[in-house]
Image (cartoon, rainbow, N blue to C red; front, side):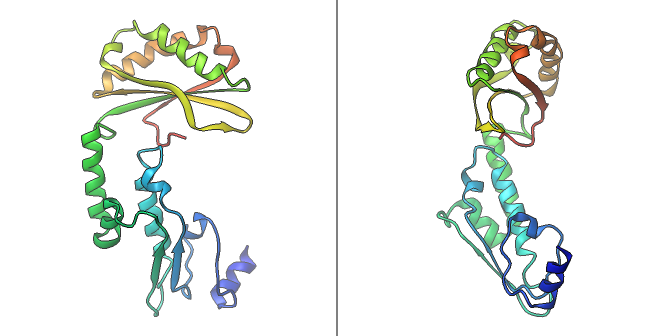
Length: 212
């Protein structure tokens, strides 16, 4: 790696192709053109934070171009150049993009205007994760504060298969943090007693940062 980086800095390598790791903290003074491929998953991803991550990645990658005397240029591949978020990011910058993104989250009552917990389950057998989460949901509906919460699922995870296991999610949302935490503190004591608890691997993620 060190040898390759030296070749890049010397200019003997005229073209770099890589993942987003290229954008992480490297200084390439000879780079004047950056192309970012297929950013649309950030506009229409299953995770509501996908557009935020897309914008941050574009800014990071764009920062690799034109770091020395010569000006830099950035090309973005998208099928939706007229998307409002894309227009704001490319024409007015991250602050304008973030303002609109926050307005959209507020209208949809998504974090930080609501509070979430994500219960994940995975197993070798494809039916076990959703069965466990259904048992969980049925068993915990009578717990105090359950009526103050929204339960979304159980559903297959956006990345349904990973490392040979089938995965499912149950998302819980509340307008206030306290009812969610009080419900969780009681529900977690019930989880291990459920019929399929020993047949799945489960976890609780409060304020989840990714939904995959």
